[in-house]
Image 1 (tube, each protein chain N blue to C red):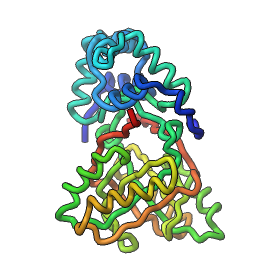
Image 2 (cartoon, rainbow over the protein chains, first blue to last red):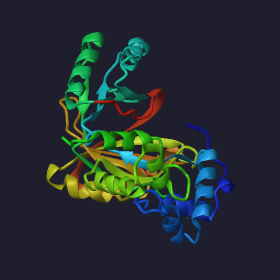
Image 3 (tube, helix red, strand yellow):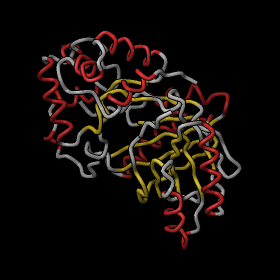
Image 4 (cartoon, rainbow over the protein chains, first blue to last red):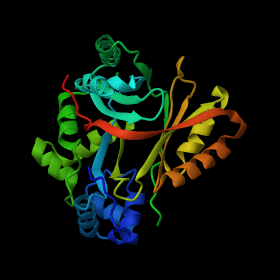
Length: 157
Length: 160
């Protein structure tokens, strides 16, 4: 994933409108780009070209359906632990070695390692957390989401 | 738990990396899977209605769009008001993810909101806006900046 910022002139007003409009409810119709483009004053072909370019320059990471792991029978869980500073890298390697660890961030807090577990079954979360606890000797605190509030991210138009 | 049949699983596998950028993307997927366009649209509509598909959408790259400072703000909010306030925090245009999560013995915060800005000062300004919105329902807060990405992989659908 691109880790540098695009110059402001990389996007015009139409690109920004696309980024804001297409963060939800892309049509499930035979010609969805025509339908979505109409609201933006673009033909389907023009909208496709714009999305291709936004992907090429790294302004978007993905375009398509977002699947819910839980609804597919799997599970996700945010977890945190408190790794002693001197032992931090060794603990990170032990945590990251698990394929169930989708991402892992060092954060500036007493709980200094935050990672997401993604497993095929809900039971997999407790099992994987238990294994990490056994390997590291540290408590893995689990913070499953109880509710999600999603609206989206808006770029200044 | 949601039951998915083999065709659903093939459809998910064919679309989880993204939709084809062609004028009739569902017809293209149908041709690849030996289905009709109507079958693909109907199945995707049902998966959406069941919540298996959360949304069909573009995912902006915050970093590329100048949002290089990101903080996980966390809030200890009165349980009785947390749901209603979560809705309002989630609706703020600089909040990308907002979740209600359980507390823990070492952790008093139940509302999590990812804040994005062009600088840490801007993130702190947004944090102040969240604090103002929560008002007296909030009994304490903190913000955790990421100092290093230790691992990052995409979502992979497992079989079975």
